Length: 246
Image (cartoon, rainbow, N blue to C red; front, side, top):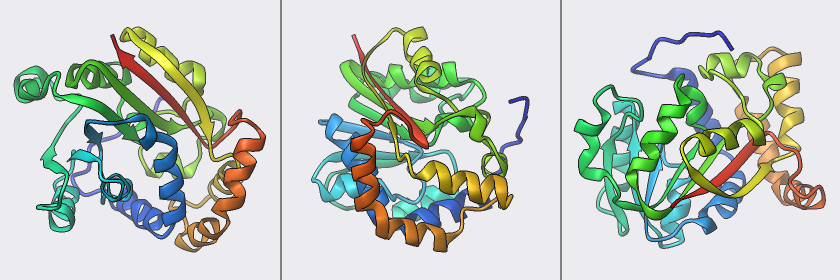
């Protein structure tokens, strides 16, 4: 896309979306089951938001460092998680800071695993974002990235959430290959979500994901998980790629 977005210190649309997601704990748990099993040791979460997925890692007794770009999210995370067992810290992190090496050099090669869920699409220079993620990983560390799938689905939701683009397996894998990360897994996720995204965002032209829609979706997650297995994760609203820093 040719959109250009100005950074908003307070992201109302993003917050409302995260709150809608919080109303779908089964979806969050499904997402965690899909990506969390791939990560161990000291784990870094890029873009923790209000902690929807962070909580799943803690419930599974995994050690995790929470980060975000916005201070309002960091304040929320500190209130909710600070002092809890297995929290490695809650800190500001800007993946494309112009002085990234200077500001975050103390974290280089510190983490065994790293993940970013619905983050990279918000960053114009996604190649640099992945390059900086790689710097934070130990040798042999694993990176898991989940982003929205299929540029043809780009609609009012994406624009309101300031998504620069959507991806497919090939375009997301290219980010890993460009940064010399060995790809170990690729898949799509949440096939049925495609229809809800298209209907609400393209047909109804909504800009915020309806909380009621997420609550209904949440009840049907067990069925949707079966459908994903039946189609072998060959299509979905999101795409996931995992890679190793060799």
